Structure formats: structure tokens, C-alpha cells
Amino acid sequence: MRLLTLILCLGFLSSVLAHSYHSDKEKRVFFKTPSNGEILTNPIKIGFGATGVDIVPAGVDMPMSGHHHLLINVDKLPDLKAPIPADKNHLHFGAGQTETEINLPVGKHTLQLLLGNHLHIPHTDPLISEKIEITVK
Image (tube, rainbow, N blue to C red; front, side):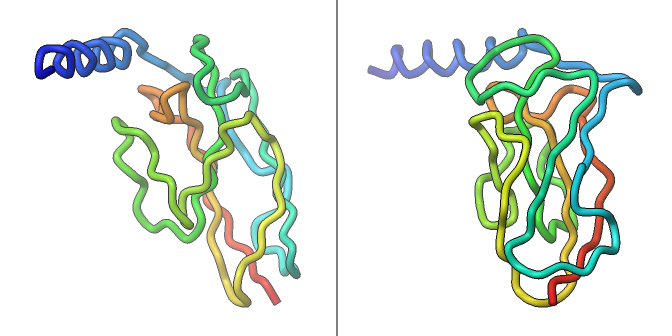
């Protein structure tokens, strides 16, 4: 049983290491909506944009592709060499979605996008949007 577990772990790690995902200045992720500084009411409509990369569902292993992760009120980026956490501050859009609606408490909030590959791991040169701030009234 231990040997099987070791083989599975080594297979997973070799898959991760074999896929070096690189980006360059022509590749980016960004918010289509909302704009930085907007004052909004719930539900908040958020549109995700990307150039130079293919947006695909989680599990689809293609070069320079991935899916969006929405970081809400995150002060420090997650470990960029590990899968992006999944919690109320790190929302996964693993079906390849490019828009969503969310409800946030009244007040100021920061939003940022981070692209993850087929294993939810950021690219070697991470594709991270500018952080925007919105206010919910």
C-alpha cells in the first residue's frame, strides 16, 4: 500500500514539474467589470477578462491555459507554487466561467484575479490582475 501511495505521489509531482507554465507581457487577466472605485449594490456583477491565454475548465491540461480564481479581501497572495486555496476569500471558477454574481457585506472590499492551471496552481510567471477596490452600499 505504501508503495502504491508513493508511486501516485511521484506521478502527481512529476506531472506538476513537467508543466512549466510561463507568461509574458502580452498575457494578462483583468476585470471587465466592476471598475476600481465603483460604488455598488448587491448582487455584484463581476466580469473576468484574459488576453493571450485560453480559459478552460479545471482539469484541462493545455499550454498557456487555465481558469480564474477571484481573491476577495486578500492582503497576501497565496503560495504561488501550490494549489490556490478554496475558501470564502479564494473563489474558484473551475468550469471556465468568465463572469459571476456575488453578494458582499456593506463596506469596502478588494478584488483580484489569479489564473490557475489545470491543477489550480498559478503559472510559473503568475497571471495576476491589478487589485481593485469597490464599495458596497
